[in-house]
Amino acid sequence: MVVVIDPQIAGISGDMILSSLIDLGADKKRIIDGIKDSEKFLSNSTINKIDFQKIQKHGIDCQQLILEVNEEPHERKGSEIKNAIVNSTKALGLCEKSQVFAESCIDTLISSESKIHGIPEDSVHFHEASSIDTLVDIVGVTICLEDLGLFKEKIVCLPVSVGGGTVTFSHGIMSNPASAILEIFKNSNLIVKGNDSKEELTTPTGACILVNLTDIAVEYYPSMKIDSIGYGAGQKNFESFSNSLKIIRGSNNNFDVDSVKILETNVDDVSGEILGNLIEKIMTKGAKDVSIYHGIAKKGRPTNLVSVICDDENVDDIVDALVLETGTLGVRISDSNRFIVPRTIHDVSLTLDGKSFKVNYKKSTFKGKTDFKIEFDDLKKISNTIDKSIKETESLLRKEIEKMEIST
Image 1 (cartoon, rainbow, N blue to C red):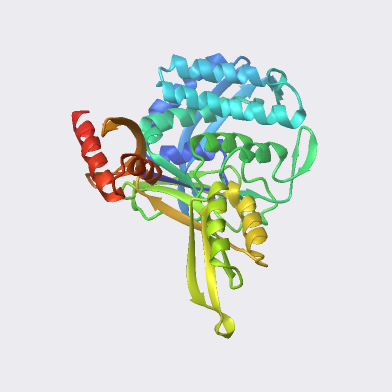
Image 2: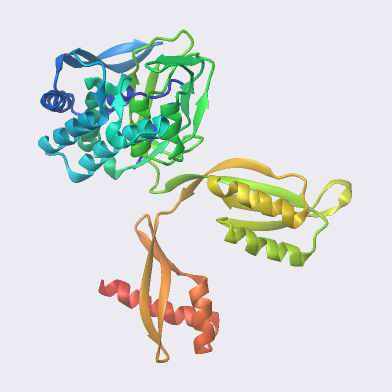
């Protein structure tokens, strides 16, 4: 199964996530009762009314959180909110994974404030996030995720719209996105983007829930069969778009999904030795794969196309290597989504010809069929040690590994 979070247009907030999950099918009564039971852990705050109702945003039926509260404090220590959330998830009997998730969400919020203001985490005071809204959003979303079984699902996220313009808060006016949003997303792999709405579209609470829910960013919807869709409405209204968050649940043939960068450059004046060395150097810099294709370029010149697959964090180092090693004057960069057959990494100790070896292999399962592949470096080393061909060595190792797999 796969879950897609789509905040491309309207961004994301805690109440939008909560409302989307209710619309996706979470037990509304369980969530409302759980939030009401959590109220007692936060002093000087009373929930007068909480419900979810269907409304329309630009012609789209959405769930929206209706929350009316009485509160005295204008600010609270972050630790007070955290203790209330931790005590709530324990008292509600949520599973360990749920409790860890909820605590991680508030920890992310506290940590971002700590780094922005240069103060210890236990000294952080919330202003905008001091309301019981923060507890409602984090505890409510956590109950929803457990109720829907989403902690077991693969969750991916499309680019997050953060809006534009400026925001006004307790410390004055700041360009949008505010520092807290930037700090929260800095430690994730998720992609953010601005637009011309002149409004804050992503809130710190929504951001901290999102980054703890997934770090898998995709540019496009994965290939999937759609089973259910949840629409969660935000509180604001906009003329040009529906202020709603979409969460989609479906199946995708048991593939894992991720996003990679493709780096490409054409070189026509370097030797085969340089290209061979280039492959080794780029792989040591974190590339997932390197390919070189021969072709014909402008004016009929023979050329070599160097193509590299890598993650975002390796792009700069690999571009440097491409330029320095080949003298190329440009590197093309593009994004690409991948479907990956899930795999696990294993190692076993085996004895061949009286010698002991540690063998690493990857095991994959797809549509009920299981296969494994031995790491070639291990295969090569063992082949040389026992003085047998790669093919013969692989056959011997596969037989031994298959015996061990069957016995376990």
